[in-house]
Length: 253
Image (cartoon, rainbow, N blue to C red):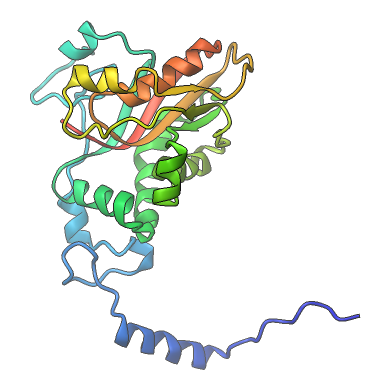
């Protein structure tokens, strides 16, 4: 019987020569500044550019995670959360969606810059995992794309980010609970009120499964007004979910 072909082993010296030739024609440079050295382990982002990213730091709104400029020793909720009626208990993000942070998210989302993922995974491990670890989560629900948008983009950035968070927490990714049934217009130029109306009926449950007592983390790439992640949280709550929290890579201010 013929078995599968055995892979050809490349001697270490030849492999080093091949790697050096690749670096000669394709130098490992930072994909943001184009000047400093940065390799796959860094997500092709140099330390200087990473330092220019603005982190979400405390104090923040206890509900939506909006950073507050100044000193604050007690928990608070921003005016939008006081006036709003979010279905999620809390939302948190790693970086501010401006400057280098916005550029990273934009290239990842619209230009398939998957080489940034080692960097994102490290941020998730350092800044997201500690805040979620040790609690009885049922799994991670990425914000779904409409099938037409999924075909156009060929991937869902929320799914890939959710998988990285799931890896860090040891949780499964559940894309079988919520679907996007309405191909809404882009949220970019809409007001807070318009965003909420735009996505209010954009999602529905995939099945009539009873989610009573379950706890979920909803994941997306950017949190702006919270309208999209809240719409997903409402679907989960309608099926009996007890608690939902939100994590996004970036947050608009």
